[in-house]
Image (cartoon, rainbow, N blue to C red; front, side, top):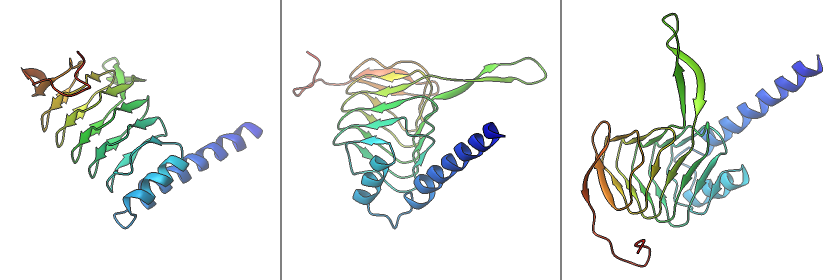
Length: 180
C-alpha cells in the first residue's frame, strides 16, 4: 500500500510539474523573463530569458546557455539530458528528441524505450522545423537547415541540411570562439 501511495504521489508531482511548465508557463501571456525565472525555479537550467511561448519540456534535464534564443513551439522531450550552448538561435518548431525505441519483433516493432543526450555547441543556428535525434552532438558554429533531421554528429562550422542531414559546406570561421 505504501508503494502505491508513493507511486501516486510521484505521478501527481510529475503531472503538476508538467501542467505548470507546459500549460501555464507556455502561455503567450507569460512574459519571457517571468517564464525563464519560473523554469529555473522548477529545475530547468537556463541562463537566458529568451524562451518563446508554447515550448514543451518533458523533464528538467535541459540546460540552455547565456544569450541563446528559443523561438516558439519547440519540443524538449528530455528523456535524457539536452545541453544547448551560448549564443544559439533555435527557430520555431525545432524538436530535440532524446528518446527512441529498440527494434522489437514482428508483434511489436517499438521495443524497449532508450535514450541518449543531445548537445548543441556555442553559436549554432538550428533552422525552423529541424529535428535533432538522440545521441547527437552539433559542433560549435554549425547551421542546421530548416526541416533537417540530424541523425549523426555535426563537425564544427558546417552547414547541415537534408533528411538525414549531411554536411553541405564549410562555414567561415571568425571571432574569438573560432576553435583555433
